[in-house]
Every structure is written in C-alpha cells, then in structure tokens.
Length: 507
Image 1 (cartoon, helix red, strand yellow):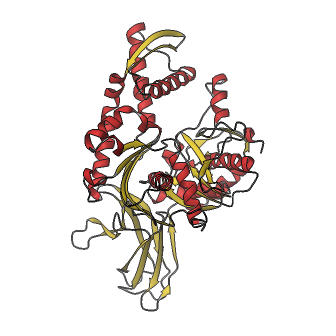
Image 2: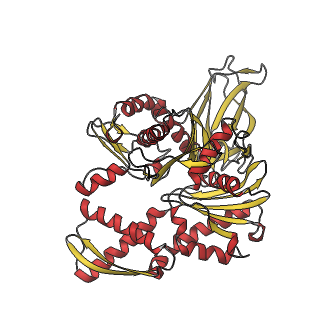
C-alpha cells in the first residue's frame, strides 16, 4: 500500500488512493470516525503516548510533560527534550513516534503493509529541515518514496478532483504552526511550481496566544489580579483560546459570550470578531506581504491568477478571505476553500501514486516539477576585499532537479584537503549553513590544485555534493556533514524509538 502523510505542526493525517483512483483518509485505529491525529507526544522512561490519548490524559494530569510543535525545531542540531533517563530526544525521533502511530493506524485499517509513503513539508523548508523529515521516516522504519511540499500537494488534489487544466493557482496555506504560499500552473500533464515563499513560525499557534493574552487581560480587569499560570490553568487557557478561535471562524458568528474558569475563579468573557481580527491583523498582513512577494517572484499580477486556494485550518478565519477579496478581484469564485484540513494529505497520497509509477493506472497527471526555494552556494573569502562572500551555484526558483559545477583551488603547496562551507540563502544577510564539504586527501597536493565541485538540488529539495579531479575525471574522497554529532546520533535515536513502547497502539 502506498500512502501520503501530512506531517502537521498541530495535527497529522495519512491517506492513500483507493481502487477507484480517489484519495481517502485512513482513520484512527480505535475510532473510524477520527482522521486527524494531534501532533503531541508524551515520553516517560520506556513508554510513549501519542495523539488523542495524550490529550485525554492531560485532563486528569495537566502537569504531565507534553511535547508539541516539535516540527518547528526540525534542522536544529540539539535535542528538543530530555527524558527521565537524561536521554536527549531530537525532533526527528519524536516525530518518528508520531509516524509510527500513523503507520499503525493505516495498516490496522487496511489490513495491508505500507511499502512506500510520501511525507509533506512546508514549501520554505531548507535542506536541514527536509533531511530531518527524511531521518524521522528512517527512524520510524517507513519506506520513503519522497517529499512533497504542502501547497503543491493541495494544488495537486485540486487539479485531480476538479479536472482543472491550463490554470494558474496561488495556494495560501496557513496551518497550525507554519505559513506557506506557492504559485503553480496546472495542465493535463501535471503540476509546475512557479514561485514559493513562507514563514516557519507563523500560524494558528500565534492566533491562540493572542486570544490567551486577551483572556488574561480581561481576567485582570475583572478580578484585579493575575491568574496563577500553573499547568492546569495553562491547559484550560490553551483549550478555551483554540475553541474561541474556531468559533469566531464560523460564518455569521460575530461575537461570543463565555464563562471562563481560571485559577478557580470564573469570569464572563465577551469577545467579538473585530477584537480578534485586530489582535491578529499584523500577522495576517505579514502573510499577505509574503503572498504578494511570491506573486512578484513568479512575474505575475493579481489579474493573471485563475484561483486562490485557501488551505490549512487557520485559513478559515473569515478576515483572511475578506482581505484577499480586496486584492484578488474578479468575483467570489476566484477565492475559495479547498478541503482546508484534508487537501494536503489527499495530495500526498496522489503524489505517492505518481512516484510509484501508478499514475496511469489511476488516470492521474504523471508530471510534477518543483523549484529551488533558496540560492545555494559556497561561502568563500574574496581575495581582494578579504570579505566573506557567497559563490552562488544554484539560483533560487530554478526548476528541480538543479545541478551546477564550480572549480576551486588549493592556496598552499602542502595543502592536501579543501574544506568548503555549503550555504543556502534568501537574502544576503540570511545565510543558513547547510554543512561542510571536506575534499581529500588530495592525491598530489600542490599549489592551485584544481577540484571540481558539483552541487545538486534534487526533486525533494535535498542538497547533494560530489567532488572530482578535473584532470583525471576521477571522483575524489569527500565527506559532507550537515547532521548533529556526525550522524552518530541517529543510531542512538533509532534505539530509543524502537525500545519505546507506544502504549495506545499496543506495540
């Protein structure tokens, strides 16, 4: 069975393409009516709990340690959490527990085994973050077919389900923890990315926190004191904030009146949509600015867009649609919701069919072409100015896969190795160190010894490197390290994941 996984910041889903060629979601093993798994994990000694069970237990034990939003820490080379045995858990290992749970659900429901899966990533994820997702799949023993960007997955499902051809789309994807925007074109052969942008730490989490601040402010005005923010109070505050956000996102709900219990004291809270919109106005305007920047990078104007798809739970806030209608004119039919909570998972399942060679079997468009999200190059020192510069080999927005070569030279006669810093960047002052490329030992060290370096950005957005002797054409010894603790941490993390018992799965 081939599956697609929407690995979300707050909720995750898994899908596959059924016998009729339609993508369907696979439910929780304990309740066939539940399809979204909360992206939450609790780890204690050799026990792990994942998803809904964690949420339920928190009602009884609000002070239990719960791991959330670990997706935001992909690509950071330090543990996200230390357990009671002082074992450091990287975000990849925590995500692996979530992936194992999704795999168990899918195999339990279908009665078959997963022999290939596609996992979604935010469009703006860099190389380190994408490799973290790949590592998480490896730790979960999931056979990975590839990665697909979340807005692309949503657009792919839109194109398949609506039989849409010869259209230019903008996908505005505002989820629980990240924001993505992608400009794409669709035809009868496939999906082609024209431009993409986004923000790693902007989503529903920030909106919940704004509501939480509003509640605390009203509490202080009524009671004259601050609530004690203990574990139980914070749990209640998080839940009521999320409920208010969801209810204010419903059509025709302009205000809410709720009784809120904090610190064993109740207050009557009245919050209207205008107050909520005012509190998130700055964040929404930031998403709009990113959207317009992305459109500009594609070389398009608002009038060139056939449809704007609103995807992700937080995109359902009416204020967003109202703002977009003022920008993308041309009628209400131009801006609409497309399965905001499910489209990404559906599209991942469809892409799994594409990568496994089953596109023709299900009459799916066979082609997919992404683009690079960053400039990729080598950090060097200018011999004249002595300033650090970036020698860009692969430019942003090039079609994937992209490959480029450059020749570098030794600066000393006895130099038997060349060490190069591989970086990604959007702007000059925003460098991300991908890793160090070490070439050598060189067979015949000498001054100005030439080494030809090839950088490639694969279809998954992953950076690979190789080094050759241009005189002989022989590949030189090289190592490319961009993972914490020289990749040795993966062995320990794999042991931790495999030894950890996921109680609610019975394995």
